[in-house]
Length: 451
Image (cartoon, rainbow, N blue to C red; front, top):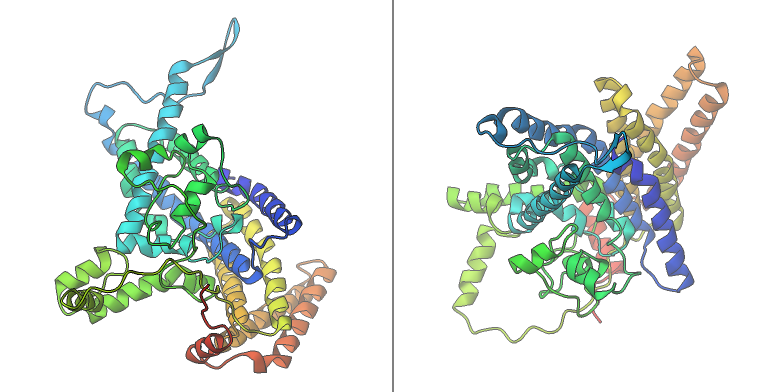
């Protein structure tokens, strides 16, 4: 089991502690539907990571094996070995090995800084990273809201470390520790830490700025662990006021699959609508949000009178969908039933063949996507969820017929699917026919207000 997967129980313990802290302090850091969306996106990221992380580590290992600098020049091998060693006098510290580990951790963090920075400055990279920023809340659950495929291109930024001769095992450990560190800084419960910590490390205060959509906070504080990179490269901004969280074009969806893909769809539309290869290139590799139509609007406005000074950043009412409480409880219940399946799949991945692993991944993605669709009252979610329940019910009948599982398990599964299907049929009128109708419905019941 990897370091990140082993840390998952700790993540949930800390989320529970933060939730308890907010309740005791009568503060509101969490919204149920938003947190379900966060954890669903994070689960999809981990499921996809069973396949994509092999590409990242495999690419690193291939570069190390075939192109590391020590193959071409007579240079020392990167010191990758245990820091503590046993000798006749007892336990001793291998200082060269310690230096190798510290250097590896620092360089991995530096590479992360540049990957993270480019993920905000280039549209193709932003399409993956926007997943993490699309929540309008800021809490420890948001830390788990990660991209499923956004890391596929990250190998470009870590490749120089393989060229220097860093072993892939050492890189994998430092990379995982870097990501685990970033979990705890996604909180509003900690205001400021001692000044020397704030000057040296990335902290909740610094990272809140990074998640702010305020004009003065956008595209700042990219650090993973060491905030010194931002100070050195001119991208640091201190927190002055509570940020407004989210993205400039709010997502307005709980669907974890749409959370993962919406920016790629926007890029594809811009490419299709572009009239020149230059515009198509800029739609993909230009700044996030660039499109030919937006560029024309900017050019036109440049010849008009200058606009009045913009008012201070207002705080919009966060998105929520208007579905019956009973339907919301249904979705949350099936979300809670799906998470243990996903955790089992992650722990059993190394023992499973490709086909059952892919089937399990498909089931988890379908179940969580349906949860998001039910929370929005989408008509397609009613059909997809009924199909999922039907397939599970058929599987339960098969288990009963062939005695492949304890009878109580098969009967409970069949009964649960039947009750759930009847419940959905009873509440079928709560599902709106189309996406446009749902968006109009949400806008009517939840207008964006400022203040």
